[in-house]
Image 1 (tube, helix red, strand yellow):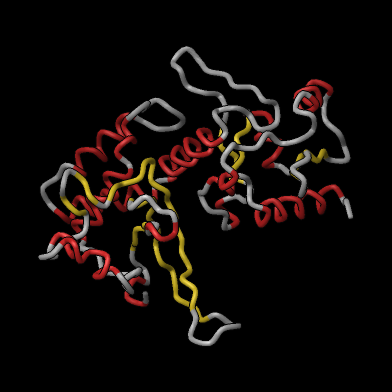
Image 2 (image 1 turned 90 degrees about the vertical axis):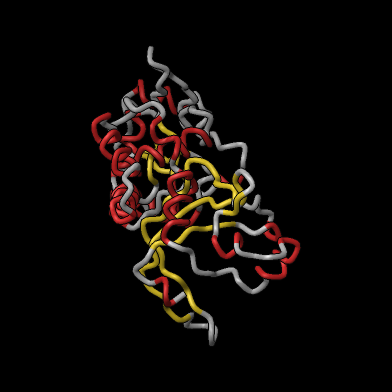
Length: 275
């Protein structure tokens, strides 16, 4: 893992852990630090975590995504080969191929959010370049591009909540078929919050604004907390229509994580002087 510091990696959940033999995200390793409680145990500190828009199978069209797997003479020994190799090297070309496949849906709905067609066309041309160095620069620019990261986050959160506001229950679309609901970070990226669904809630624009400013928050029981100064009657009606509780995704893995909610509540209580 120390060889990965300041470099990019991809994640794959193994079959033993209920995985689907597909790569599902990429991130950058910032550091490796020792566990203060357990000797010879370590943590990998990750940043720029980016879940793929769709899983990338490790076997695509009869070809493995990793050279080490492609070079195996006896495929029946694959499981034996992988034993003890949860962390293994990945060639640059294979990394680029996996990441490109993971974000291949980027060019759908180009007008969505703040994305600009010219930006996408430029990125596409760089990805199509024959030079590996150009492709690598294009992939890195993709992974750190705030507009694209925000769009990916919004898509993931919106899909988890079936494109309904988790507070009002409303699901609105414009004439172009774009949903009004937004992906609200519970802990902002500026404060170290990751772009993952458990750190997000699907909210309409006005409720997103209130949530970001800690005028409303979410309790441990997923009840909706309202600031001491109150809200206009019209906004209260939207919240009351939900029964004062957050509408949660069907998949419990997508529920907002308490570790993020507690941080948001702490700031909410500080602002409103609630003990």
